[in-house]
View 1 (tube, protein in one colour):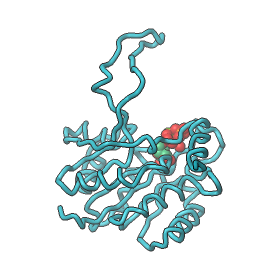
View 2: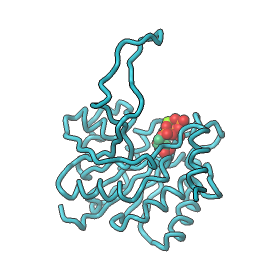
View 3: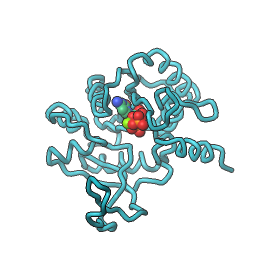
View 4: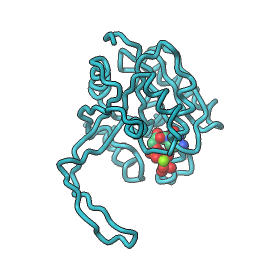
Length: 234
Ligand code: CTP
Ligand code: MG
């Protein structure tokens, strides 16, 4: 694949943000007057190769989403085609709905959570470079800092996993378009917590690149506080 292959970014932004507990979909929660959705789109627009966006939001947020997208495009002074689709009950369904808006020109598809607005550009670049070099599925990972144990239903420890072999998985997860379309079309769509999980189930090789601590996912009120501090640093 040439190093000019068109990149489409799918942004699942249709989650309800239940763990954040603010009674609104998480992507529309704001930090310093910017929604997580706008912040994430702004970051994505910094990547030169991105030529198409597909954004999944809760059905009743399709119209308000347009303002958040427009604001990010204006701030980045960019004009690229985008589609807004209705999300599903699970993230897997939201991504599946998004894939219906893919274009033949989209050679690579990067799926990136709206809840990770601070992912460094270098992670996008590394994922795209690995796809350029022929990998079909690429995910950013970071080493695990905590010791991880498995427990039974009574929360009693069963065993300790070998931390040197464990990685925490982030987004953007990159795919050759045909591979992503195929795994979503053929898998019987067990909801997975990431997209590469479906590739693994289909027996497709998954490559990794170094993720980044800045790519943390905003999940809990503490994460939102951390994100606010991070944005206001210096
Ligand atoms: N997502 C989605 N559609 C869903 C569920 C999640 O598009 N049905 C998106 C979220 O908007 C988020 C990303 O997938 O950008 C990661 O999901 P998560 O952090 O779990 O977000 P929420 O589902 O919103 O949070 P919670 O699980 O606490 O409700
Ligand atoms: Mg969720």
